[in-house]
Image (cartoon, rainbow, N blue to C red; front, side, top):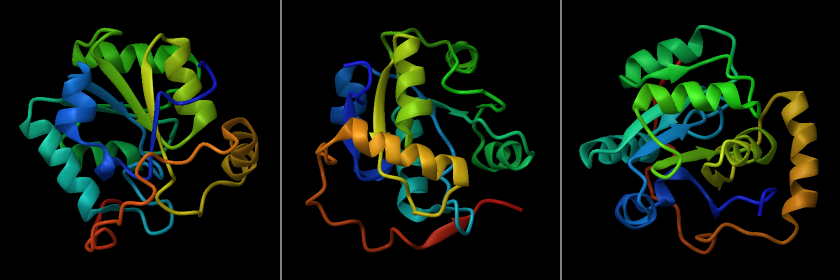
Length: 181
């Protein structure tokens, strides 16, 4: 359905790379930044998230960061993670998604979008004909306008819960790697 994620997880590290990514034919990922891989409160990449990114790359999955950010922090993060980035994407409009997909050499069929927002990430992906996995935000802190959109998200998602909600988070999930300067 257009206004619902294709899959819903508690965090990126709960997505099994072999089963949920490669097993579904995805070899390219367009990945949101804030509250998807980078905490909004202390601007770190949690250890389990960094391990997931490393594992995905080791298995041949290419990742491009896709962000609406207009500041240089996202460029610095991309450099530190050694990932390509499309900033100022103006999600959910399609041009950022298209640019990121082209950077990776992906197609609609083999490219997956992962993000924490229904309005920007999921709907933007679906506008472009891409599949989208939605995540619970890493932390509750967010920009005021994003917090307003979260109310709309909850209304649209209704009783939808992450597939892995009962699963325990990794013990080291909060041991973060500083990511912002």
